[in-house]
Image 1 (spheres, rainbow, N blue to C red):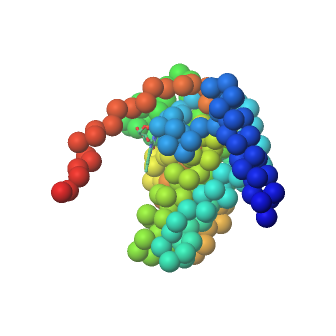
Image 2: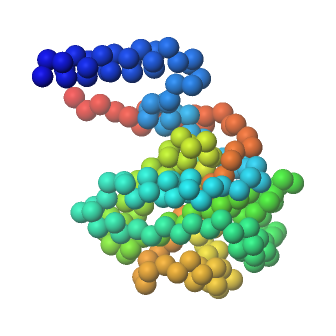
Length: 209
Ligand SMILES: Cc1cc2nc3c(=O)[nH]c(=O)nc-3n(C[C@H](O)[C@H](O)[C@H](O)COP(=O)(O)O)c2cc1C
């Protein structure tokens, strides 16, 4: 028993020593560090995102806390460049000449999913907390992606299009369960930019004594 205890203590000490000895940039980020380092990414490399990584991201998503463990969400992952191009081609005429068009159609525009090579759609069952559950799932996915070296951007802008008659074939192709409503999409890929953190208003946090 004593020997087992000594071995455990020695192993734990070695692990701590190893972590301290690691050069700063090789140290894994803590969850809090990752939360503060994540940014919304809107410029991506053309590099394909590995299916294994997308799967890891989705699995991190569904590990999220959710009301009564109902798992009232659905995730659809699209990595097909052909699908993304067809969807974007159908989307463009609907926004040309609108403020959204002016906002999105920058010279480096590649596609309607903020130029990402892959996109994850998140839909919710029409039950009370499903939207909240999907939000928590989304942050899990974005943090997991961050750890895997991927950038993300949560996108509400594709939703009205996907729910329009022009977007209907694309929504249908996602094969969502009956009655589920698309909440948002998450653009995902290898980042080709490193934006500064956007400021946060700390006055939103109040301790009630
Ligand atoms: C529900 C939701 C919808 C969003 N929709 C869009 C969008 O349509 N287009 C976009 O570029 N960013 C979108 N964003 C990203 C926000 O603009 C971004 O999170 C915010 O500006 C803070 O920046 P940060 O994520 O880099 O901290 C959305 C974020 C959320 C949570």
